[in-house]
Image 1 (cartoon, one colour):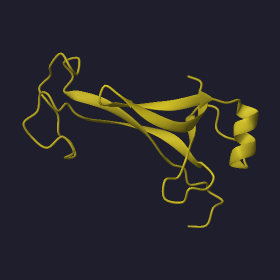
Image 2 (spheres, helix red, strand yellow):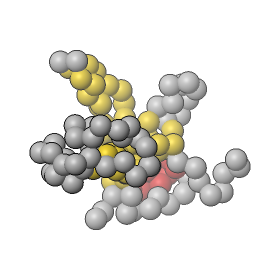
Image 3 (cartoon, helix red, strand yellow):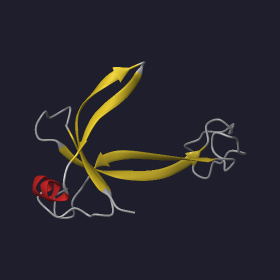
Length: 110
Protein backbone atom coordinates (compact mmCIF):
# COMPACT_ATOMS: atom_id res chain seq x y z
CA UNK A 1 0.00 0.00 0.00
CA UNK A 2 1.35 3.39 -0.93
CA UNK A 3 1.03 6.46 1.26
CA UNK A 4 -0.05 9.99 0.50
CA UNK A 5 0.41 13.57 1.70
CA UNK A 6 -2.27 16.23 2.12
CA UNK A 7 -2.44 19.82 3.28
CA UNK A 8 -5.52 20.73 5.31
CA UNK A 9 -6.61 24.29 4.60
CA UNK A 10 -9.64 24.42 6.87
CA UNK A 11 -13.08 22.92 7.17
CA UNK A 12 -16.76 23.69 6.75
CA UNK A 13 -19.89 22.35 8.39
CA UNK A 14 -22.36 20.69 6.00
CA UNK A 15 -25.55 19.14 7.38
CA UNK A 16 -24.10 19.12 10.93
CA UNK A 17 -20.98 17.25 9.74
CA UNK A 18 -17.44 18.59 9.54
CA UNK A 19 -16.00 18.40 6.02
CA UNK A 20 -12.23 19.05 5.82
CA UNK A 21 -10.69 20.95 2.91
CA UNK A 22 -7.75 18.68 2.05
CA UNK A 23 -5.46 19.06 -0.96
CA UNK A 24 -2.92 16.48 -2.13
CA UNK A 25 0.68 17.60 -2.62
CA UNK A 26 3.69 15.92 -4.21
CA UNK A 27 6.25 13.95 -2.23
CA UNK A 28 8.98 16.42 -3.22
CA UNK A 29 7.02 19.40 -1.85
CA UNK A 30 6.16 17.45 1.32
CA UNK A 31 9.83 16.56 1.92
CA UNK A 32 10.76 20.25 1.63
CA UNK A 33 8.05 21.27 4.09
CA UNK A 34 9.00 18.54 6.58
CA UNK A 35 12.75 19.10 6.32
CA UNK A 36 13.43 15.37 5.91
CA UNK A 37 12.38 12.52 3.63
CA UNK A 38 8.94 11.20 4.58
CA UNK A 39 8.19 7.48 4.67
CA UNK A 40 6.34 6.73 1.40
CA UNK A 41 4.42 3.84 3.03
CA UNK A 42 2.55 6.09 5.47
CA UNK A 43 -0.16 8.73 5.15
CA UNK A 44 0.88 12.23 6.17
CA UNK A 45 -0.84 15.59 6.64
CA UNK A 46 0.17 19.17 7.22
CA UNK A 47 -2.54 20.49 9.54
CA UNK A 48 -2.63 24.07 10.90
CA UNK A 49 -1.82 24.28 14.59
CA UNK A 50 -4.84 26.01 16.15
CA UNK A 51 -2.90 27.04 19.29
CA UNK A 52 0.21 28.43 17.62
CA UNK A 53 -1.25 29.76 14.32
CA UNK A 54 2.17 29.31 12.73
CA UNK A 55 3.31 26.85 10.12
CA UNK A 56 1.12 23.79 9.59
CA UNK A 57 2.13 20.92 11.84
CA UNK A 58 3.33 17.62 10.35
CA UNK A 59 1.01 14.77 11.34
CA UNK A 60 1.05 11.05 10.57
CA UNK A 61 -1.92 8.73 10.46
CA UNK A 62 -2.32 6.09 13.16
CA UNK A 63 -4.84 3.25 13.01
CA UNK A 64 -6.25 1.10 15.78
CA UNK A 65 -9.33 -0.92 16.61
CA UNK A 66 -11.94 -0.61 19.34
CA UNK A 67 -14.81 -2.78 20.39
CA UNK A 68 -17.91 -1.98 18.36
CA UNK A 69 -20.07 0.61 20.13
CA UNK A 70 -23.26 -0.88 18.62
CA UNK A 71 -22.85 -4.41 19.97
CA UNK A 72 -21.03 -4.18 23.29
CA UNK A 73 -22.35 -3.50 26.78
CA UNK A 74 -18.96 -2.58 28.26
CA UNK A 75 -16.64 0.39 27.83
CA UNK A 76 -15.33 0.26 24.22
CA UNK A 77 -12.03 1.89 25.31
CA UNK A 78 -11.24 -0.83 27.85
CA UNK A 79 -8.33 -3.02 26.75
CA UNK A 80 -9.53 -6.35 25.41
CA UNK A 81 -13.18 -5.29 25.15
CA UNK A 82 -15.01 -6.90 22.24
CA UNK A 83 -18.61 -6.85 21.08
CA UNK A 84 -20.61 -9.89 20.09
CA UNK A 85 -20.94 -8.81 16.44
CA UNK A 86 -23.48 -6.89 14.38
CA UNK A 87 -23.90 -5.61 10.83
CA UNK A 88 -22.15 -2.31 11.69
CA UNK A 89 -18.85 -4.06 12.50
CA UNK A 90 -19.15 -6.92 10.00
CA UNK A 91 -19.90 -9.37 12.82
CA UNK A 92 -16.36 -9.06 14.21
CA UNK A 93 -17.15 -7.14 17.40
CA UNK A 94 -14.40 -4.61 16.54
CA UNK A 95 -14.32 -1.33 14.58
CA UNK A 96 -11.26 0.28 12.99
CA UNK A 97 -10.41 3.91 13.68
CA UNK A 98 -7.76 6.21 12.17
CA UNK A 99 -6.61 9.71 13.06
CA UNK A 100 -3.86 12.14 12.17
CA UNK A 101 -1.63 12.80 15.20
CA UNK A 102 1.38 15.15 15.51
CA UNK A 103 4.56 13.44 14.28
CA UNK A 104 7.61 13.36 16.54
CA UNK A 105 10.76 13.06 14.47
CA UNK A 106 13.59 11.02 16.01
CA UNK A 107 15.98 13.96 15.66
CA UNK A 108 13.71 16.45 17.45
CA UNK A 109 14.38 17.35 21.10
CA UNK A 110 11.72 16.11 23.54
